[in-house]
Structures are given as structure tokens and as C-alpha cells.
Length: 200
Image (cartoon, rainbow, N blue to C red; front, side, top):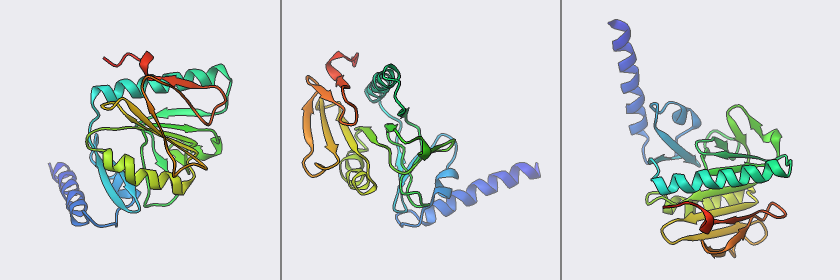
């Protein structure tokens, strides 16, 4: 009985510590690792952002994109790896920044270990959720540009649109609709077609 009380008390202390610094920029990866099982969050410069459970359309798009990209890499016998969320990216290789992109494509395997990717992925895809618009369209645009992500796609299922940021043209993102074949800039001949996906 004493052991059970001790564990419960530790959980309360952990939650109190979490609440005490809410809104501040003092979070670290240790705070992410201390979250209760099943809860997910991201860190940008020490500020923590909780992640809500995704909607079904979000997961449909995520799974189908990851499969298409993975099959392309396998067919080409490429060195890149594709990881759907949840997958940890220690993007600045410090203790104050940690994200879980919906899809991460990493072509430098030296950046990978059993915990995730250390440094910027080559290609990131984020699929908008109602709660993630500001994060994906503002904070992460800046973060991914700063850290050297070569290509960043924002997929908006509601508007059936994709915004594409590419290195060298980061301030001039390309806008595409789901009806288009959209080329992946980091690969020679990969085109993704949202109109061919089963998104009903």
C-alpha cells in the first residue's frame, strides 16, 4: 500500500511542476518524457504545446502519403527513410526543441538513432488539424526554415490544398490543389496525387 501511495504522490508532484511553468519557456525534453502515458506534446524554444488526437481524415492522409513515399524509396533503392508520427525529431539537437511531424523523410542516416532524428529532416509534411493551424502555418514554418528542412508541405484537407515550402524559395511558397499532381522537390520523379487517395 505504501508503494502505491508513493507512486501516486510522484505523479501529483510531476503534474504540479508541469502546471507551475505553464506559459513559460522553461520546458525541456525531460518534461516531454515525463508526460503521462498517451499524452503527446512538442517543444519550440522551451515552450510546450499539447497535441490533440487527430481526426480520421488526418490519419487517412498520413497513412496513404507515408505508404506512397515509402514505396517510391523502396522502388528506387534509395537511402532515405520515411517515418509517420509519432516519431521524435530533436530538431535543434538541444533540450528545448522537440517536434513530432506527421511525416518525416530523412536521407542522412547518421542523424538517426533509436530515439528518433537528431537535426532537421530533409522533408516534413504536416496535416492540418483545427487545433494545429497556428502551429503548423506559423511557428513551424519559421522553425523548419531556421533548422534547414529542405522541403515542407502543409496539407489542408478542409480546403483540399497543399502549401509547399522549398529551400531557396522559402518566402515564396507554392500553392496546389488536391486535383494536381504535386512533385516532391527532394526526389527526381516522385509525384503525389491526392485525388487518387481514398479520403471518404
